[in-house]
Length: 285
Image (spheres, one colour):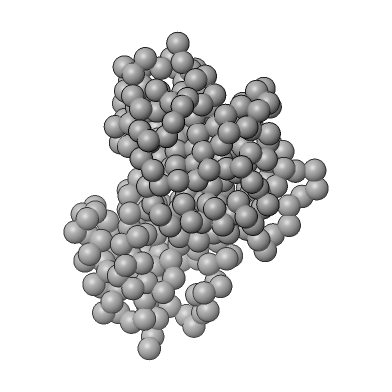
């Protein structure tokens, strides 16, 4: 049967939801391209605030059904079909996974070798967010490195841990108590697998709700969607002893997120930006 690719332009915050819908619709391969990734030949790059999601199907009919399903959830999604060349999609996606270097930190897939002199973390890219190559993850890695260098043995809470990149890297940098929280059981499983892959012990990964996590943490990092950050602002501030780092925020969402956390008594302490994404840093009063 002829393989067909479905290329979707979707609002960037909806990319992960669309990814899950496409897998459920029977995609045999899938990738998300943000603005930082070079476009594939013949495919335009995404506009600001958009992501390109490409999925492959065994024939036109399931691809069309998938597009219809995505549009029920994300009406703004635009899609195009193309007959795909004969390719082993089980391995072709590897060419789009990139290692990331942030300061002395390196995060990459198992088939790449870390440069000498780096603090390296190997992440198996599977069905969870966070292989290190997304701008929001890189922004958070920089904050984690700086905080852990200034606060040896600090406790760290990683909210929306995904594949565990931030929590595991914090542990490698000398953090004490480290807890990773994610409401996706698949993410919890993969984060635990990545801890074992890197020989990292002492990191607690759980799918428990945030209000069931005990205690406060010197550093809280939350790399999740802006609307979720706003919803959980009081709870995130309550768990923060010293510094709170937020990502997953697009430039046009910055004011809304900042105001929500200032209402929750957090004090804005600067941040950083990469493309359309911003990182917001706060401290406890």
